[in-house]
Length: 215
Image (cartoon, rainbow, N blue to C red; front, side):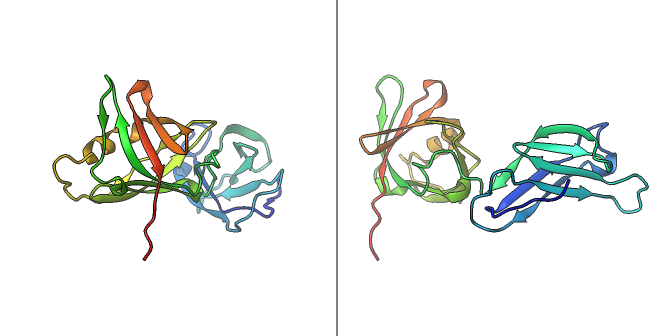
């Protein structure tokens, strides 16, 4: 299969070849790297193929290719051995364009039994949704970077956050937010505010558009 890469956005392909009896033990590893660096959309039908060989081996090289949303593993003769879900990371755009490029600051947290917690300063708790599924956040006295994905309408999940490790003062919402960070599962836009909901009705974080000061 010839390699076909049209005009496309930066594509990072991670291939896990720990396939048991399908892949040889010498190939049980992960391969990750940039396949294409242009910042424009891939054309319909674009594909990517790579060949994996191990030095001094006698067997023919295995081949893997990205076909639509699948990773296809073939032998040197082109016989298909297996097909798996392709894993793309890096600059794949999240599904929710309405969040992309927006910045927010925390208004309050609404928990069970009508409990409401408000920050002492809204600007100390912020989230910025960057391109490529990246985000930056400030949680009181700490700042961090992480990832976000939106698999469908109103769906939202945060990846692990890598924050600084300062000790925030008493009364801070820092510890609660960090603990609940990975339990965000959905969002709603209401009256210009962003509502982030925890799984199993665990509560709602309400954000308003971030007001950035000049200078």
